[in-house]
Length: 423
Image 1 (cartoon, rainbow, N blue to C red):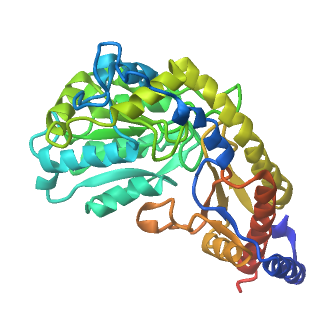
Image 2: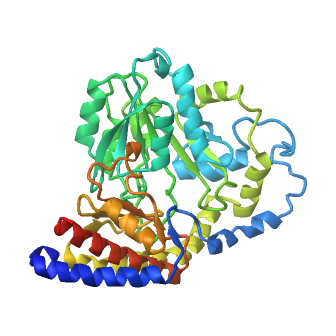
Image 3: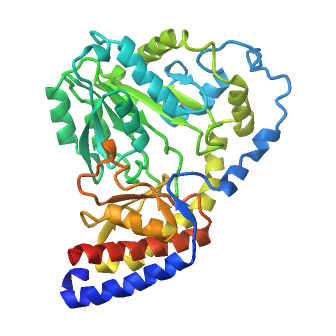
């Protein structure tokens, strides 16, 4: 382990690692692990959808999907997606191509118009604050930052956010209006919330009567193994505690079919859904019903979508093994970093020595590997420990990924020796 090395041994090691780094630089590589994008082979899995003839374009109830109407999504699309969130037909809206847009619109609605049970719109308060489990999803944080919402870090524990901290903060501060959650294979940690954590969320007693849990179920069917995680139904638990209006759930097929051309949905209590529809009617006459119908015809039902995800798994599970095997082999014996081995999702979260993340990303870039920016997994792009890096294995080929991970591990070692030598 590096901590057992003398200063002289560390310096010799640094020189050796630097030589290896220069060798990588000389190769002129261009490898990218910056975003969690499906690989081209994954996109091919759904190409048949683009060739399907939709025929008369009619739904079962006779609605012509080529024309105006159906604000909240065709019934067949609701039936297809509602198992992702565990909701009834009157507890779901099927929207357009992006759950992120639905999240943004829902927050904007709360800011400008308020939510059921609230005294006034969020924007009428002196401050609006959100709890942000960290490390987390940069685009969640970007929504808050763009709207001037103050973000408060909440650390992740082994089974989800620190609920002692969540319970204390929401019970004391009326300006805390929400929390971001990725409950299944969290981005980027890969952690899934335990039953206990979900039950504690459902039993929250916020000081704000308009507090909302934004439950982003982006990876709810994105499993990497048979023994996959199963997260408790948050809406069912909220109903048991009388808090059914407290949660807003989101999901999409962005990483099931085509990113940017899938279908997305909101799941919530009937009161929340009715309220959202009453405001959404001024925004749109309806979303892309042809795309909704296209997805329904392609998958037939939810089970068809689950089977389709097994094809994705066959492509990306070996890539996760490359990442984890390389970390275990190159970093594990030296005790200079930590990571969670996820059972699903799209990322591996690496935690190095404090004060090394920016340097690791810099070294990787010099050697031809682009990573998610250091700090991106924290609000305002500021990692207080400068130690977290999100690894996105899905897009590169297996050969490219192995090369990228070799460079990553060499960069971790080099940045660590520099830190230990106080260079």
